[in-house]
Image 1 (cartoon, rainbow, N blue to C red):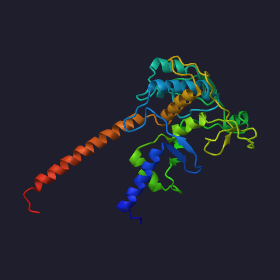
Image 2 (image 1 turned 90 degrees about the horizontal axis):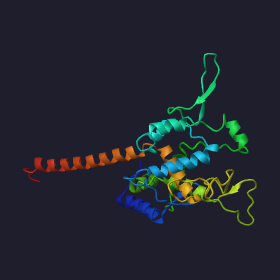
Image 3 (image 1 turned 60 degrees about the vertical axis):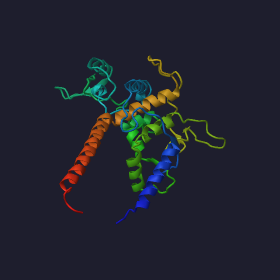
Image 4 (image 1 turned 90 degrees about the vertical axis):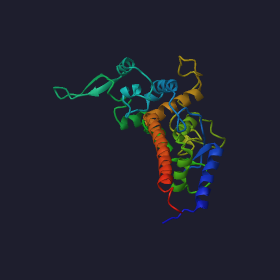
Length: 290
């Protein structure tokens, strides 16, 4: 059994504070640094920016959807509370743009039909083998949970190796910073470079921000003025990357705003309850000599 002294706890908190001041996150396995970005959904009171989510969805739809699926997101999810703010009619029209497989029919045959709001986004490929064949043997990951999946392998830059579960727990408790996934996605999408002299990546694409190495099969997916925004936002690679990263964070955690609201209300209740207990205790024991 491990006993934590006051000095030990203070040291752990100090280590976490140093990570905050460093302004970045480090991959637990690779030692790579990722700058913290300014997200509207950061912190205990953070909320999604609906305009940014809509722009991010546009980038996903026009760029990412040609290779990456979004299989855990249904069309109707886009109109739920804390989502993109689409109306029921907009969602119906959007769903009708897609074809999904259904069936079997009365003759036992599968058939395709226009998607409906309760359907999930269809995959661009019929199966994984077809996806690998179309991408040089690499399987494009589903993006439904990518923002949380990549966050699971990220940790604070504390300078402590190996990063223990205890430090990770204190880090999250003290900072409540949970945006490692979007930070990583933004860094990856904007991190493509020409390989340094003497570095041969073959048919891969050099990107020192890639968590699992310095090169990956995916070519740079974004470029300036690739997607036309109608709200006047900058049409740059950096803006596209930030918008689609925010959208993928929503896809991975659509109930974020509700969770934060419930958590804040719980903290307020506990604070009031603790105060009532304290004054009740003082009143009940006020006539007792100590």
